[in-house]
Image (tube, rainbow, N blue to C red; front, side, top):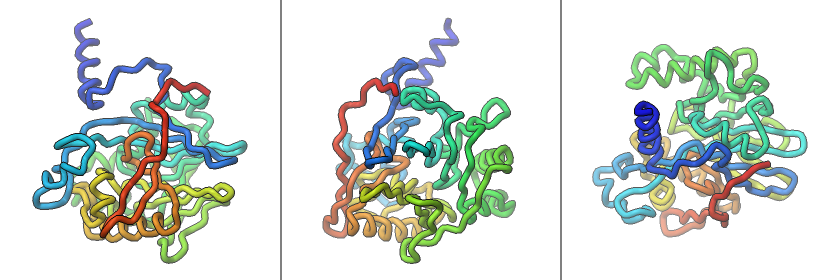
Length: 305
C-alpha cells in the first residue's frame, strides 16, 4: 500500500499537480474540419519555467505568461480522423495515449499512419513498449534530414543526451519495415505533398529535420507546427526568442518568423505540440510579433466515442 501511495504522489508531482483522473477520462479536443476532424490528444501538462527561454534575463518575460512567474506547457499529438483515414502526427511521450484513444473510441491498432515532426522522446516515447511496436499497423513518415540526424554516430557522440538518440534508434529499428523517408521542401519552396490534403514543410531549428504539416480539408486548413513554440505566449509575441532545447537557436528563430508570417498572412489556424488545451489557435500580427488566440473550446469534459 505504501508503495502505491508513493507512486501516486510521484505521478501528481510529475504532471504539475493535475487532478487524478479516472481511466475513462480522455484529455482531448475535437476540431471540426468538415469531412475531417483533428483531435488534440494531450499526453502531459506540467509547469514550465521562464528559464527555458534562451535570453539573458528570462524572468523579464514572466508577465506575459498566464500565471505570474510561470506557465504551463503540454505534450500533445494530433489525430486526423475521417471516413477512411486514422492518422497521428507525433505520439507524445506515451503516458496518457491509451486513455485518450479509448476515450474517442479508438485504439493503437486503428492507427494507419504516423507523421513525425521530430523524434525527441516527447514525440515518440510510447511507440515501443514491452519489446514490441505499440502501433502494429502504422506506417511511419520520417523526414530524411531528421532520420539522418538521429542515425548519425557523430551527432550521437557529441550529444549530451545520448538516451534520446538511443530511443530514436530503437523506434527506427522496430518500425524499419514500415518507414517512408521523404525530403520536405520549405514553405518558400511550396512544401512537399505527401498525399491529398497533407503537405510537409521543412522547419529546421529545433532539430535539423524538424518538419511541420499543413492539413487541408475542403476549404479548411490547419498547420500542425510541432515544436515551433514551447512557451507560446512569449514566443509568438517575440518570435526571435528561442529556447535552450533548440538544436540551433538562430535557425529556430528564423523558421518561427517565417512560419508565423505564413500562418497569419493566410489566416491558417495552428496546432502545437506544446500548446496547452485546446492546443489550436490563430495568429494576429501585433507589433513585431503575433498575438496567439486559442480557438473557443468548452472546459475539458469526459469524452467517449
